[in-house]
Image (cartoon, rainbow, N blue to C red):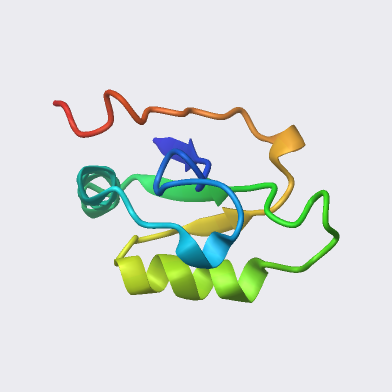
Amino acid sequence: MKYCFDIDNTICSGGVPYEEAKPFPKVVKRINELYDEGHHIIISTSRGHWSGENWLEFTKKQLDEWGVNITKYKWDRSQVLMYSLTTNLYRK
């Protein structure tokens, strides 16, 4: 199965500046469990959409530092069906 997650306010505290975002440990843990079970984890974000700044490399590094296992990055949220499972993500 493919799971698609936004970053801000889903995997981490949201808003600008992105440098101050803090991961939600239970969400990171659950995403990694899904990844370890063989599911595809897609990160979809609109970071930089309004500012025109390219946040790709920063965001990849940030997610790596938080230990989030990712299959693919998608930088155009308009083309992806979003599953924002923040409240139920870590429940089985």
